[in-house]
Amino acid sequence: MFAASASGTTRAPFLLDMSRDLATSLTLTANVMAFTSVAWGASSLAAGALSDRFGRRPFLVLGPVGLALGTMGVAASGSFLGVAVFATLAGASAGTATGALMAEVSARVPDRQRGRALGWVISGQSLALLLGVPAAAWIGGAIGWRGVNWCVAAVTLLAAAGLFATTSRPAPAPPGGRKPAGGYRAAMTPLVLRLLAMGVAERSCYGLAVVFFATFLQATYQAPLPTLALPLAIFALGTILGTIAGGQLADRLPDRRVTFAGAMLAASAIAVPLFLWTGGMAGSVALGFAFVFCAAVARPSLMAALANVPDEVRGTVLGLNVTSASFGWLFAASLGGLVIATLGFAGFAPLAAGFGVLGAVLALAGRRTS
Image (cartoon, rainbow, N blue to C red):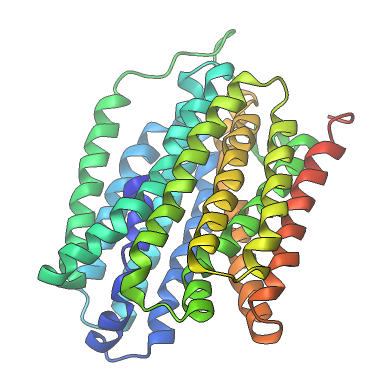
């Protein structure tokens, strides 16, 4: 998960360098992230169901290999078109692996340990922000953005080798033996659909802060980019700690959807002062930490609830989760840009709070019917 996330996030410090090197605009270069995201979500939709039918090991090993090859292609490309094509391949390969990865983890631990196990796996994404991006910026000063992509490819190949070794011992078969894959129709129960909708709301709420927090600090406090390293590290640390705490709560509290709802309501309450109060950078960073901590607490409960489905459709469901999460990120980016243009950052307060409340309502309203 660290390697998959780092393949995209480590481009962020080098967008200007990439645009100059590729002789294209900064806006067009930034859209490479969108190509990656769309390909990630689309491939996960297909790979989840296929992993239930053909086994997860090919996706767990070949997905990272494809990601490494795509990242190498980005590093070697001399044109924007080449970078866009290989970045799309990298995103599709990452999507091929991530849903299968979460399904495999879920198959290897009992239900009451899944919150913690999935929490640790998800924390790899946060580590890519906390460690991967600063390390890329530091290393990139010496070897450039192309060299950083070669390094990410090497880390991804190490991950592929580790997964190859780990999955040589198959996951234990469920009681009664494995049943044939159920497909999308068997997976799309009312409960799963509700959980997926909760995931879209949660990622939209969380994504608004993650995508725009640095820009918010720059625009509000006229903070130069070098001074944002520590605030963004604190922000990423909140995500990691929240994910770990959320995994513990998901396994220790009796109802995961109530845990999810409580965390989302807390994040909604903090979103209001986060974007409306601008009395000082230290206070805004503290509020940002609290916001992402609460939002991250919700994620393991949702993932563990999604994983608590029959083994024959688990890959399909968790693949759909990755796809729905990509919709949440797209909603956050597109609606956030529109709100900034019309209302400014103050408009983020009701938008983020609204997504959080929507997720909580979906969680609580379905408890009696599912």
